[in-house]
Image (tube, rainbow, N blue to C red; front, side, top):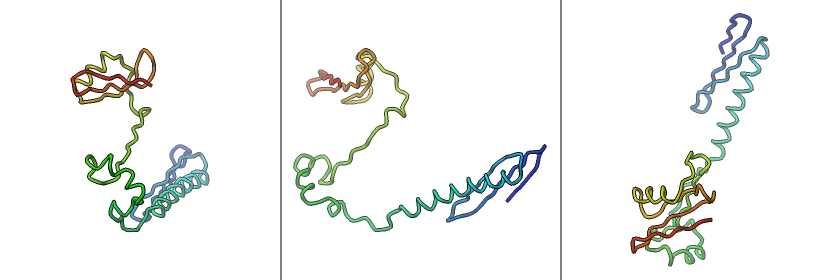
Length: 147
């Protein structure tokens, strides 16, 4: 624990090694007791977070993919995805569009992007303010799906 006083402001810093994590609680205040209690509160929050992460981790060994999926669900999914996923259950990956800073674009801009990237392009239409998907067809033409 380090407690310093500079120009009437107390700076309390408490460092603890807990479960292979270096946890630090720091607080500045005009009163010594308030600075120490604030540092302890921050340290307590960090300890509770580390304990919760450690407690929530499942410590059982993972089985094979086939044993985890129920037999009925695997039979229902198997025929349509057997060639693409080698018999494993397909995964869904969510993309948070709010986290990205993509601007809305026009159909012409999307056509330019699909030429660079691949077979499909998802974008927000600037004119209609909706999500649109531009797909390249096998014959070289395009399909546009708007929501």
